[in-house]
Image (tube, rainbow, N blue to C red):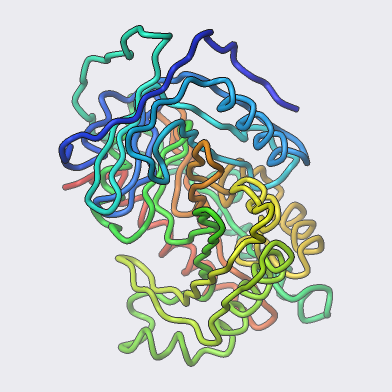
Length: 414
């Protein structure tokens, strides 16, 4: 199912070079639907809405890809920069499952980007008309927050993990990534820029994103496409401060975490292999350390088939969900998640990022995030569960992951 907002006629889009605009997130003028995909000093931010495509159902990726190709084919494009992320760009956010509504492509009226020291602005207009200009409003702090159980409280989450372990030990499946939620409630509507800025400052090596009220900072890159090149960063296996004096050593030496990581890498490689002429999969993972946790990480790189390289959205359809956020075998894991979580994840753990008019772009996995709705933020955290997982340890791991969004919601950039 596709729902498309009416398009203005005579749309033109122009990308031009600009001087360094400073911190990208600080450019977002107000709290009305800010858009972001920023890592460190590079990335994209946007505001205003030229077009929106809402998609649901099993064909959501293919339908989004078809709509995007059709939309960009109608544009009068003047791209004076010619880099990935210039020209027309849509910010994308997809639901975790094909049964949930809410997948969306959003085309901003104004976009500012920076890559490799080069900065640009992309603006849509009606023919030769001016771009939309917004007045700037200051970022609002969250104020006092009250935390409450979400749709899957911690006690039920522990029980779900224990049941998943029992079924894995019985041989029903190898892995499932189970998650739970937490509500943060303020006295006034929450400003997504406050959460976004706090996450970007605390986690500069993550991709800080905001799309249609979903705000987070993910360390995991589902897929990046640049011409015929494809890349992915797979994360699975986690440790957090206090578990050991040598976090990296313990993580690399953990048979449980190494097995969980191998399942995630294998599932991604199997999905990419039919679309690639060559694929480089590391034999040994590295460790990336973040503010609140450390992860096993593998960077997978490949060359797409040169004659008809898959677009970014076609790649996303092929690889999502990986075993990192779904499980192994995929169908059995997804059925178990639906049964034991008994909640709609929405766009948590779904692909999020951007795509340009050439089919290039970046999609991360929407982790360490919250869905904002007025004064309420719905936070999510999950863990990969295998046969030798300990339910109490998984509960502590999920709590450690929730720290990222909780701290940023309460303190912002302070």
